[in-house]
Length: 404
Image (cartoon, rainbow, N blue to C red; front, side):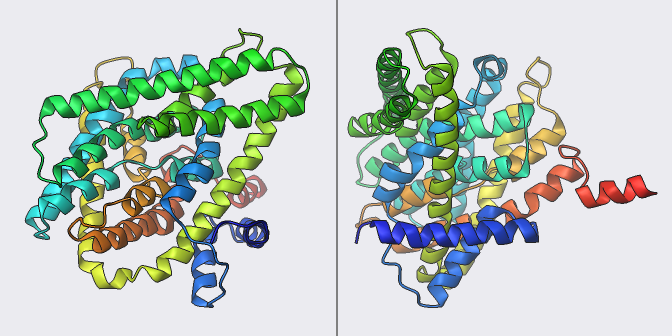
């Protein structure tokens, strides 16, 4: 059944209540939403909504990517372009290889199952990362590194994922095929995003009606994503490109001053709605996955994913140790623990072919890894940020210090 309007209202009501409660309890909003979704499922309250690959890709992912891209600045992005690019490419390959090897030789999974799961579980998820770091109040270079890497590594993941699925059919796939697939995925997405972004800005320059400008930005966010996906390119990278253009380029007529403010406010709300729906639905779906049946493999995969992330971050950042793009050790620790998995991994897992070996187990394992990211990594992120000096002391602590 589709996501009908009454279902949206019910989900948003739950999200609003959860938002108020988590603020009072000082819990991460994403954690509260996931727990609420689990509670709804355990209470056998049927909302007739199912988390599917199509729902994630066509409805919920574009607004989150677009809203994040609008807030990014060229100058900051260029300053760390090298380390971000290496983390989003070489880093993903290293992490995916380690997970796949572990599943093959420790869990004794066939390569046809180990490689696709290794690829889809290694990419950090823009939805979870952006939600967690925004809620924690992280700003500056750390947030840029984490968010931009999570957005850009989709191109690498999409290329490797496609090649991995082709390899499961027994077809020979060489390094040249992987490189070509990656190049086509990235370049095609950049072209789609640039074309849509330029066209929308040209149209926006012909009006000063902020409502029309919001409408055009909506067309840009979803249009770039769907156009790229239609041609087999990276929808995330296309929407990222469009958002970056519209957030940084003032030529081509572009948006009016009032229009920019209205667009920013609209997409902040759209991102909130998409986040709310995603994490509620993840919690509801978790109950039906029977994760306990694959708990051993799930625990192994969580350990492998964390180890792979550590190898990728410390290894790739080590290449820039003597350059201007050097990443501090504290930031590297946070990049490792902040490598969250979420909706993107679930969408790819739910899209695995029916004839793939261990398909059902792979989906359940993916949900287990995502649950660990949300309920453990997200929950401990703010204390870790504070411990490493990226956040100030709690307000209560500050007040006590002042009294003394």
